[in-house]
Image (tube, rainbow, N blue to C red; front, side, top):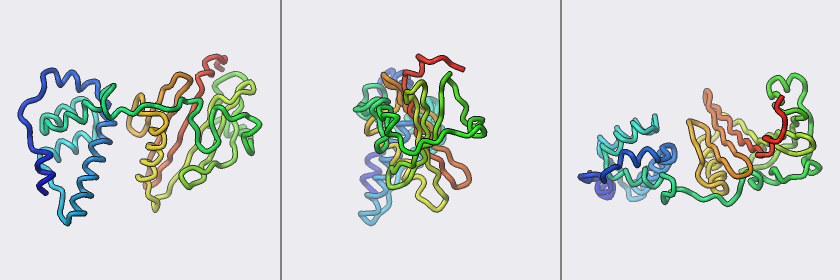
Length: 247
């Protein structure tokens, strides 16, 4: 389609120092943003009864970058299509695609569950068995770990675990396992968008894990896949655990 070909028409020349600036980009964020852009272009092409077409060089460079989002693959991507540099620049600190946080680890919540939830209001607490403690060990003196009642989130029941130290809620997590017949990828995107809405752009990222480091703790979103199944977990930890003695 003409609008796609114009968008990815090669522009001669790149700004001086672009390679050094590129090192500061969040490559995983850039991959998401470019993927979303391509998805919207494909949808627009279908709605107009056509097909979105990009240059072969762009497609090959995008596939290499999408498979391994890093500095080296991003350089090759920009060299193949200089106009894509704007996405990488927008994903640098202070760039236009960086989202600001409106909550911290303490106030971030799933349903009524947050680090601010009084222990007396945590429903159905059941301490882990000795066998479960082997899988989920204590890390601090005086720590007890519990299952709690399921919490509804994005229309599904999620399993809940909480960690209590000296009468204080210091960590909590929610987790969900999806079967192969469910829309795994879309739910993963929904969970990420929820976290990003309140916590802003991730502080750090790696394949399948997103980290938000805040002034009073951290939040981790973990997405793992295995043979058509997907496990999604959110872990929230208070900075107060630094005040407790490690085992």
